[in-house]
Image (cartoon, rainbow, N blue to C red; front, side):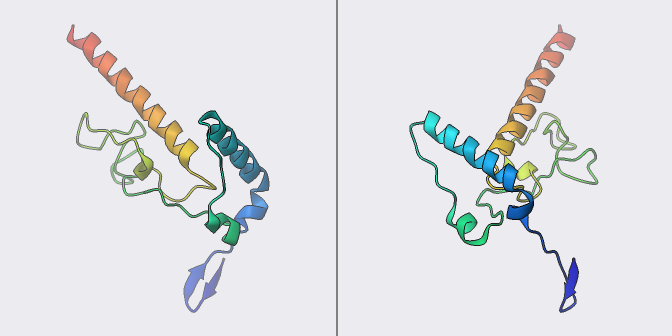
Amino acid sequence: MHLDDGQLDVSWDFAGENAELVRRMTDAMRDLAAQYGASFAPLITWQLFKRPFTVHSLGGAHLAEAPERGVVSTEGEVFHYPGLHVADGSVIPTAIGFHPVMTISAVAERIAEAVVHGFSSHSRSAS
């Protein structure tokens, strides 16, 4: 970290520090594409800049343990709006790596499980 014209600047060699992660994510994306009969190619921005960029809508409804720190609980339920859940990339606060599809999918699946658990708990208490 350093100041550049009075602004904080963070230098981060993402590609160098995360070479193994990037390799594994690339392999996983190739495997996923192959399962669908498709092909995989890294984004041109990765090939040019070797840093994470995202075209996915990330942030805006951050996961948090308290409403003072975010919009939704760690189960994806919007604070102060029981039964309203968010299960997409908006719960992820920022660009997280090479391609966020696996993380977004995992978080969405976890939230879906919490919703199902909430419904089954509610139906048991109602009977």
